[in-house]
Image: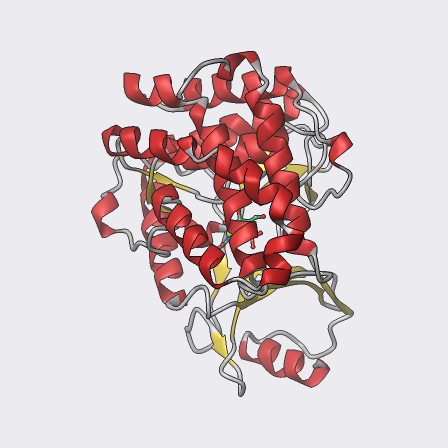
Length: 349
Ligand code: GN1
Ligand code: MG
């Protein structure tokens, strides 16, 4: 592996005498490494999962469009920087046909896996709203759809239904309790179908979880929105929903002890309020459905983890055999807790 790293870095003109290279972050799709050169400069090196991202160049083209717009209209805004190879390519393709990319590291920053205060949640909500608002005015039709139907809940529901038909009896049995919970919440897909076409398309992040923001070292201010792989046209439900999903509870999607999953009401409500306040020209239909975002994204993620479990774990990186099932249980439990919140009482059904 070391040899491989040396060759990759050579393509970027980085000396072979790097001091350390270590796995970084908690991504479920790409492989990410933090690299520190002998001179102390840090970079992020990523191997793109090309069975998910089949056209990695599209990611860069979307980023270039966003960057151009932001530099011209909001020059102070800091956007993540991809670094080209010495020969001007956005990716280095190794001998195994793997795609690598280099990203500049933002110093004095940290990734959080959960938020510890309402203040942090408000910062996060404001940061993702700002991201979408500043990209208002960019021509969305020029953006590539990176992953078709990515946050299309109706499609996710179909994929899940199809997986039920082909899953092994063993997996179906071990998942049976969670499967019945999911069945009870199918109305979320029906509601989604009834409203989704009324919501305007905006450029959204589409993976707006807390770990995709870089905070300063004190955890007080957001320095940069990261992981722009899925930035594409979509609705505000995607980003607000992923924020609720990753911040309302004090524990993340990998937590196995469901008794730790609770809803911090002030964070849930603070997120919704601050996110919608930060979206310029928000429409009444978006406002009316803002809180639905939480139900939609949590239910969708439960379906996605469960679908992958039923299909023998081919999509998400898993760390142990029942990992996807545990994640689906976690998300299904989170959904149950969310539905108990007064803001959802009798709404959207
Ligand atoms: C994946 O790999 P990562 O952590 O950036 C997934 C998201 C899920 C997330 C769940 C392309 O994101 O949609 O919400 O896992 N990304 C893709 O943690 O499927
Ligand atoms: Mg991502």
